[in-house]
Length: 405
Ligand SMILES: *Cc1c(COP(=O)(O)O)cnc(C)c1O
Image 1 (cartoon, rainbow, N blue to C red):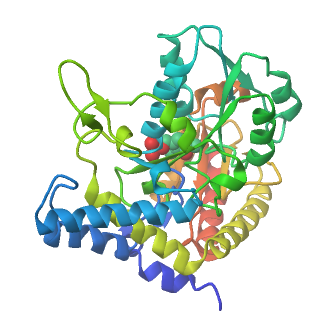
Image 2: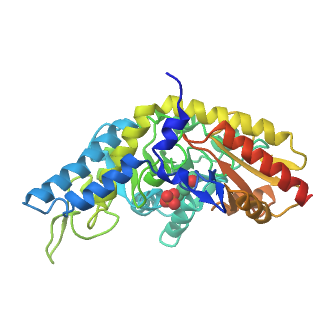
Image 3: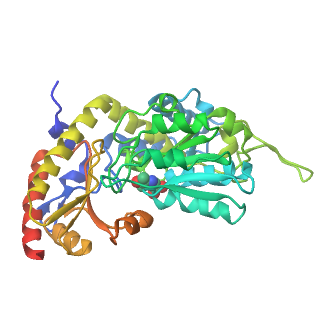
């Protein structure tokens, strides 16, 4: 069966849009992906047929809404191959998932303990650990990268001491595209008695993820970057660790019994889900997973890889274009600059030609500093992008490069 991009595109209503009278070329998928009709229809169905607060209700609608939400939990469990649904916690996004780990697992750390991060982390996998430093005297160590944008694994191993408790790195960089060797890194961390947390915001949308095979103790991601609704994220956590961790927030749903003389916590995963969850969007997330699986993650990955290779080759032929991140194993995004031109000017000019790219530091200021730049322009691809769109982008970029040099 051929990969039918045109059929896929018909499922994404927004792709019919024009900007400034030109067909939209949407290359900002690493910031958020677009949403297929199947997901939008499910959100609509929930609001028109099934909106009732989950868990608390004896009535029919509440039970249906609960079933819809919990069906997604099972769907996510299978999608990432978690051992049980108790290990799948719903959050508001990858950011909250990482804050949960830093805050709650962080409670178990002691003064003098050490945390290993990498220079290519998104702010959401840096700042929560720095917030922990205001409560505990923990030390943060940083894995450097080589010239191609790969983590320096010798340096990584050299950072460990007998105080290293947790490593937290991204599955793939949202700036460089580098896919990190998580399995190998997690194995080493475990051999040194540390746990391994993965920021999977750019992992899950682009390749099949098996948390057990990877050896991830925690794995965080966002629904909106994988064709699902906004407002929902997932934290996978290994049961044994989740059981040891204190709750993240207090409120309804996360308790066993509340009394002013002492309160007990609910069972997993509810211990970490205080308050009314975004059950409408959680319910609709399973439709995004259905959609991805109806096409096949391997085929999506292969298609995106074709776009990446094709676009990279064409961009390298444009005078003045410099690409940041040339690791052999990359997810489908390309960061670049044109000569000394400001990233913002390039972004504005491309936008006027109907091409949506992102410019700036991409929430990775430490990485920018290490590269000696302020920001980049980033083109990022998804399952519905086409070689024809890459051609449009290359034609526009060629014009922009001539204007700015
Ligand atoms: C987008 C992103 C995040 C944060 O995701 P939110 O959906 O904003 O919570 C974290 N890490 C990486 C690598 C990202 O690309």
